[in-house]
Amino acid sequence: IHEASFNRMLRFSLLLIHCLSIVLVQSRFNSTIEYFDENLSDKNKWAILVAGSNGFYNYRHQADVCHAYHVLRSKGIKPEHIITMMYDDIAHNKMNPFRGKIFNDYSHRDWYKGVVIDYKGKKVNSETFLKVLKGDQSAGGKVLKSGKNDDVFIYFTDHGAPGLIAFPDDELYAKRFMATLKYLHRHKRYSRLVIYIEACESGSMFQGLLPSNLNIYATTAASPTESSYATFCDDPKIVACLADLYSYDWIVDSQTHQLTRRTLDQQYREVKRETNLSHVQRYGDTNMGKLHVGEFQGSRNKDSPENDEPPMKPKDFVASRDIPLHTLRRQIMMTNNGEDKNLLIEILGLKLKCFNLIFDREEISLKIL
View 1 (tube, rainbow, N blue to C red):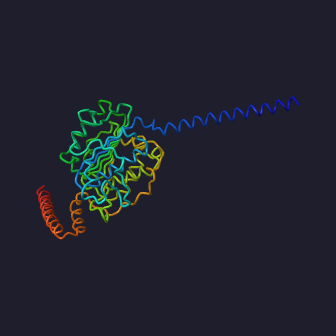
View 2 (cartoon, one colour):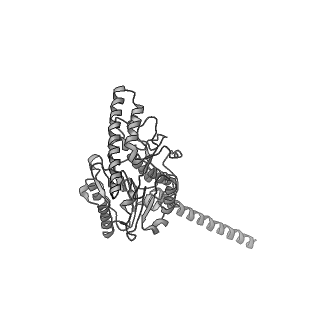
View 3 (cartoon, rainbow, N blue to C red):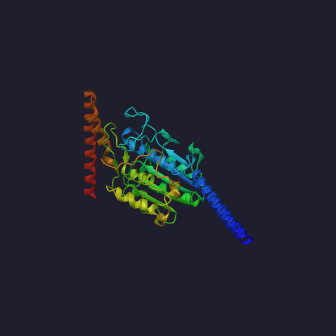
């Protein structure tokens, strides 16, 4: 009897130890979940999102930034660590039939609501952008306060040309941008830096300029010699294109994947495959490609923003440099007022003459060269 009693007590003790170990493991597991819920793992991540254009025909650039903002927030990047620059002349533009909203595809999901815009209007310029990067408080708003242990993500979308990217009233030349990046590296303003650029000839911002020893990984929408492309360009109500192809592809890729399991190179290859009208490029420290996207865009394992629907497949493409004419033609088609239609047709004729003149001059220059 004594031995049976002892065995029961032993089994009870072992069971108690087992239960306590489960509680301890569960407690540690719960604290880990709480850790990620509070985004403490993303406290050393910063993001700068820039739409460098204005005008309703450039609708897509601000739509891209708004969509990207919500995806980064859903992945755990704190709002105080996201710096946005966009002219903010689209949502309430008189040409916008959905006043106060901005869409990024034909599903007409509003991405404008909830976006915190740090620099608007005339403050969207190259000087302010460089000040933000350097942490210069004279920028007049939120600036990058990253240090040697912080990871930084920069996304820029607008027009470009060989050796430059554009802002509404000025340009940022590749050599000046590169000098700023080297300044940031020299002054230990980041641990690792990832840059995505959407623009025509965007590869020219890095090709032959970005060394591999700055801990910078960059991808671009196009090679140094070609146009990038817009998509969702035939909305029945909105005359402008709603998205850029490369931008939509990377944003949706981030939106629909757990970024702690997806590497930069995996995203690069997928975006390169999907962006099949231009040649997506990669520059800088390509060894960083094995790092996870979540180390720059947020580590919360949430597939997409709340109440999300499956993203649409891009369609209805237009070369970025052809969009002003495409938008004007759509305005003519969608205008019922005869007087307005005639005026738009006259404007289109003038623009076509200018376009042909520029094209002829380019042909002459090429023949001379």
